[in-house]
Image 1 (cartoon, rainbow, N blue to C red):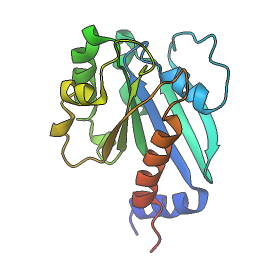
Image 2: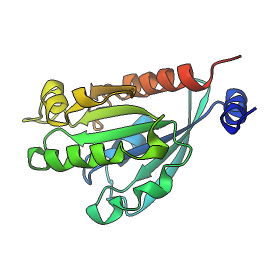
Image 3: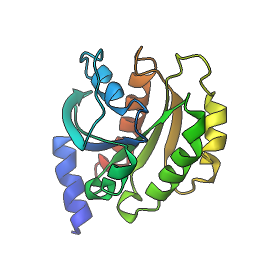
Length: 184
């Protein structure tokens, strides 16, 4: 019995899921996590480092790592990749000037060997604001059609209103559970 099999069997019993929430600074990562958790989102400060949240949802324990997206912090992201089941990439749908940087950072991230098996959920955030790009436009700019051999989904959302956050989390949990929590 290999290490992956042992880990899978342990996860079957515990139903623990490790999620990383990444994206450029000011994309709305912390707001998404707090809104999903039912916390107050009136005053959100930039994440300098990381925050860990343990949430319960649908019988799963979600260990959510919300990591700052400032340029100076991105080189530290790799310190958090180990044992990641799912990656939530948050895009600011209104920040047209930094979408190329967003695409480059995402594609560089997806080259990481320790993230090869992780399910990818992309939240196109701030859809409630005027001038937000559509999901189709974001898919094109981020060059998502070239993501091969990876389970991914792009969902429009609003961290402020909570629109589609539940649908996104449910999708990533369904995808992860279909791969990890299968029984022999």
